[in-house]
Image 1 (spheres, rainbow over the protein chains, first blue to last red):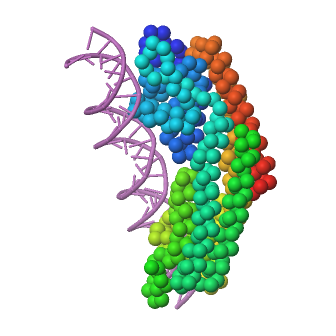
Image 2 (cartoon, protein in one colour; image 1 turned 135 degrees about the vertical axis):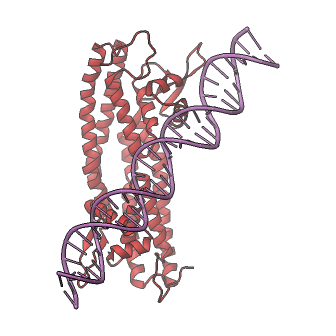
Image 3 (cartoon, protein in one colour; image 1 turned 180 degrees about the vertical axis):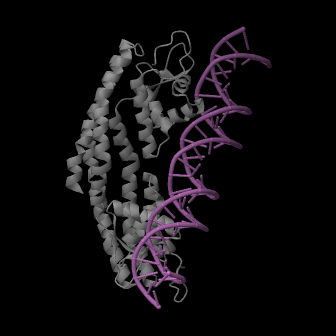
Length: 172
Length: 172
DNA sequence: TACTGCGTTCAGTCCGTACTGAACGGAATC
DNA sequence: GATTCCGTTCAGTACGGACTGAACGCAGTA
């Protein structure tokens, strides 16, 4: 029964709805291979009308200020949150940038796309390596041919994936 | 200088090209949150003209048979590899199913899509929770309104993501 | 210049989990 | 039925990385 405590310092988020969003965001991040605290911080800020200080984030989430410091740095570097100066207050404050679609877009541009292009290049270069393996006897003729065919199917797949780029830019 | 060793038992994959594919597949899996051995197994089978036994997979990759056993079960459950009976041989043999596009498609259908739909439902249900939080005083009027607006932007994003489904079915 | 309040950095701990080795069960061969 | 040869299961280990607490640096304040 989370009821607003008037005088005492509130150590945690006291809204069930907010908590469940924070939890979901944390789990999502963890699933994608990111620290769960990063997701929690973004979730908290995402539902906060006014900017929050580093300290208050740490208190509300029940995590150390160190984690919040590194987490906010990450999020800011991705353009997911913004640092805000509150006049007459020495503490750093943060607010969420709610355009998640843009985040996904830039994540694709900065992470997925380059990786896809690089692997495309490596795939073609790899056929040359396979030929060397064949010539040094590490691969039989049959194996070499088979590998080449498989690498070509891989290339086709990569082409298909790359064709997603414009769609993603368009939809989100 | 990996040259084919005639008599001695070959403990590892002896083609640089294959090794690099196996390595890449392992890293990709690890990045997505899957055991790297799963990717390595698929990579090895993907470039093998004839089916491989569980034991030979373990030898070539330098991992335990236990890992191969669990890994092959996973891959087979996803339809990424197929168990093959080699006549006159009691060992289980495996071969890769090279249609990776289909794998991605079914992974989306079985994992991403349901999760997206569920979170869509939870998002609308959550507004009701937020209203309760408001009525119990855990949320001010301003906070409640703000949260509702943010949840609506979230819903829009989810709609956008869901519209990917037909495109994905079409391209891959 | 000393002091306080802030954020960052870093060594160390803790936790989740991938992986292993050994024990187990089951089928084919004798 | 005994034995051998498989694959699977499970307890235990090892490893990576997220998180913490304390020390540090750096501004503002006296």
